[in-house]
Image 1 (spheres, rainbow, N blue to C red):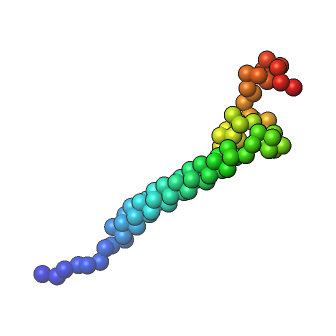
Image 2 (image 1 turned 90 degrees about the vertical axis):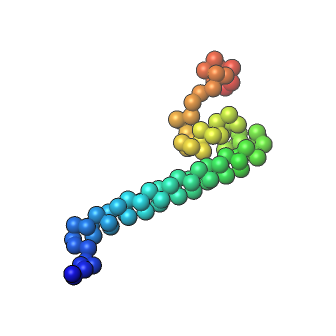
Image 3 (image 1 turned 180 degrees about the horizontal axis):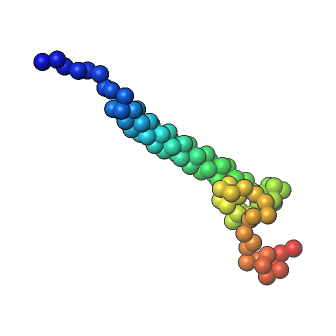
Length: 88
């Protein structure tokens, strides 16, 4: 009886693709973990600043998490104080 150790084209492709899918999943997971760590680090660093420094860069304390996640600018949600016109 002869033992065939070759994989054949289709089986080799399936093995490669399934391995690639797993590696892709691991790579995406590691990328997500890295992004989450960087987000927490940036949030922690901004929270350590006093209110005067935050005002200098145009971010209020309650906007820090949003600014870290989505960037600073016109997309920041207005607080109730701004909507009521009590802050100029």
